[in-house]
Amino acid sequence: MKLSKVERREPMESPAAMTTFLRKTFESLTPQEVRTPGPGGGFSPVEQVWHLADLEREGFALRIWRLQTEANPRLADFDGTKLARERNHRSLSLAAGLGSFEAARQTNIDALQALPPEAWVRSGTQNGVGTISLCDMPAFMHQHDLAHIAEIQEWNRFTGRAADE
Image (cartoon, rainbow, N blue to C red):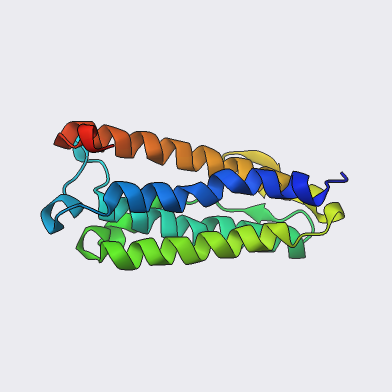
């Protein structure tokens, strides 16, 4: 697979936009709103950002590194809901979570952008998914972002903040 620099950069634009969305959406929340769960007990805003930060560091970053350095690695699934409970994300700082997510996301984007063209086809097997390659990572990041954007928009409607979107 021969990708030009532009072709390698384009898939990173959407994942990079997630940090802007989170800041814009959560910047005016009160301390109480930050910890207000979503419909059906879904993630509160602070849980959203810490979940995203955990996944960037312990999910995507680990997969990117292992796909680069190992031959056909077997990659574990990531149970973000379990980690959110175990780490009591609701009690943490929203600002620190945003910063952690932004730093980890940028590290992952930088790592992907630094890949030589021939590395993009390196692959492994992810539990519950099947064969994945480095070239799939930006799409996985984007798909995960879209799911959380939808959850956050639902949270906004649920809490009456939809007009602020």
